[in-house]
Image (cartoon, rainbow, N blue to C red):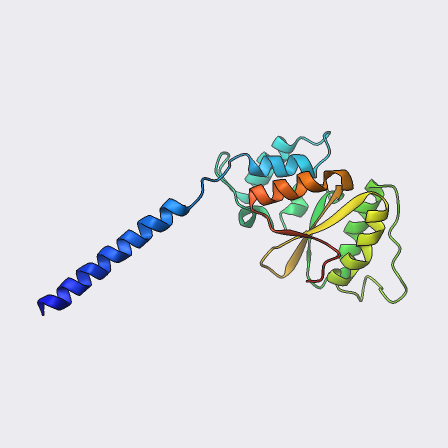
Length: 184
């Protein structure tokens, strides 16, 4: 009977030690990471700090907390960011994707051309992203898709010269991204 209590005590001590060890491994989050990401995503005339504060209020997130992408990347993107920079769309809503993508294309001075077999009303956003990517690239822009862990896409557009900065800022914030030409 005493040996059972000893094993239970050792098991509890091991669990406490393991929890303490896991907590020590958690890296310190960078409170400025979201703002840096927004600064690279948006043009200089847009106030990244004001956008972040508005996003925080829409999300109900504290003014100075440490937000993760999971806290912010959802359909509220559509309420906070201009669609010429980023938008969220349901995984099966090709028509909305095409409308938002037209806003992005207008920012770079062109209109997207969809092949006859890719009617946006009947085509999934995943396919439309892959068709739009080379058109954006041809006009000096890169189309990205964020990992959302949901049944929607979060699409972002940046000038090609910001590629390295955007990928680095996304990594620092913890946002998993891929170029929109990559299959899902």
